[in-house]
Length: 61
Image (cartoon, rainbow, N blue to C red):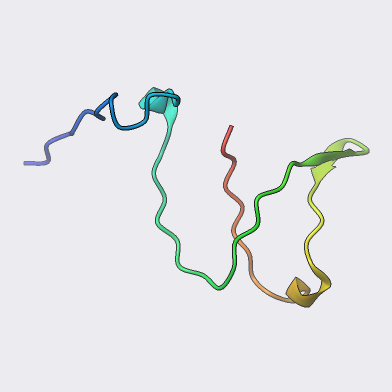
């Protein structure tokens, strides 16, 4: 049987973790940026060294 564990609110008092998911990702580098408006969508600029590399995007808020 799988038991669902309720998050402990005292661990992250500033976050509402009711609607959050936890991801564990292994990688080479991490950058945190704000998505900018670009026409009818959003855009994030990354370093030119990352061109051709695989990335994962996680929306934080």
